[in-house]
Image 1: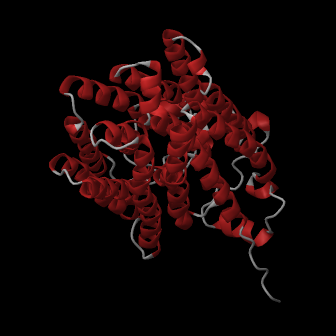
Image 2: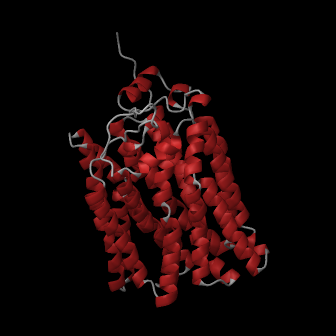
Image 3: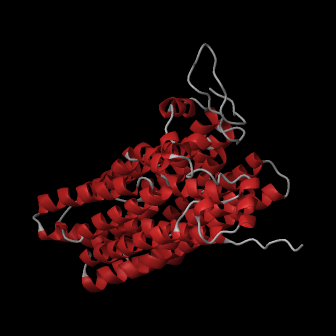
Length: 454
C-alpha cells in the first residue's frame, strides 16, 4: 500500500506569519520614515521625537503579559486577528494629527503610538505559539527565523515606498496607506489561520509528522474552561529560572540594536550624513536586505547543526554569538566618511544581528506547553523594554553631544552584552519544567526537562 503524501499546510501558515510580521514592522517604522519631515512640520526637538518614538514601546511592553494570557485563553486565531485590525486602525489615525495645534498634535501622536504598541502586544507571542503548534523541533529554528526576518523585509519592501510617499505626498499619507493594508489583511487572517487539527487543508500524514516530532498540535484545541490554571505561579517560576533570565537579557540587548534601526537610523542618514529623505528611504533598505538574509541564514544554520547531531544548546547558541559579535562593526561607522563605507558597515552589522536573532526559536524550544503564550509574552516584555529605553537614550546622547557617534557605541555595546549573556548566564537550552503550587506538602512536575534554577 502506497504511503499517503504529506500536505504542506504548515508552509502556508508560515507565509501568513511572514506577511503579518512584515506589516507589523512596517507600521512600527512609519514614524521613523516620516520622522524628519514630521519633526519639521510640527516643530519638535530631538528629545521630544525620542519620546514619541518610545511611546510604542511603553504600551507594547505593558501589554505582553495580558496579550500572552489572552492567547492562552482564547487561542491565536481570534486574538491575533483583533490585534491586526486595531493596530492598523490606530496607524491610519496617526495621519490626521497634523490637523491639530502643536501641543495637541504631539500628545495625540504619542497616544496613538501608545495604542499601536498595545494592540501589537500579542503579535510575537502569537507567532511563537503558532510555530510551536505547526512545526517539528528540527524545523522550528528556520520557521522562527523566517517570521522574525520579516522585520528586515518590511524595511526592504516598504522603506523606499514610504520614503517616496513622504517625499511626493507628505508624511500623513504613509500612516493612512500602511494602516489600510493591515485592515484588509486582518480579514484574510481569519480565513486562512486555524489550529493544526482544525485546518481544512491539512491531511493526517502531515498532522502526524508534526505531532510525532515535537509539534504541540493540541495547543489551541483544549476546551475553553481548561485553558486556565495557576499561571501566575508559573510566571514566578520562569522569573527564577537562570536560563530564561539570560535569554531575557540577551533579547533586551538584541532589540536595542533593532530599535536603533527602526527609529533613529533614517534620521541618522538625513541629519548626520546629509541625505535627502527620499535617498535615506532607499539607503535604509540596503542594511535591511542584509539583515533579512542573515535572519533566514541564522535559522537555517541552527537547524542544520541540529540535524548534524549537535545539541540544541550548541545549535542555537553558535549563530547567536557569532552573529552578534559581527554586529559590533556598527561602531566602525564613526571612523569613515565615505558614504558607501558607512552603508557597508551598517549592512554588515545588520547582517550579523539577523544571524543572531534566534530568540524566538529559543522561546519555542523552552516555553512550557501550559503557558506558551504567557512565556512568549514575558520574553517579549523584557526584550521590548529596549523599545522604550533605546530611542530615549539615543535622543539624549544626540542632544548632549550634537552627533550620533556615542549613539553608535551604545548600540555596539548592546551586542556585546547579549553575547556575554548567552555565554555566561543561559547555560543549557531545554524546555522548562513547571511544578504545580504546593498541595499537601508536595510539588508535582507537570512538564519535562528542567534547566537549573537560580
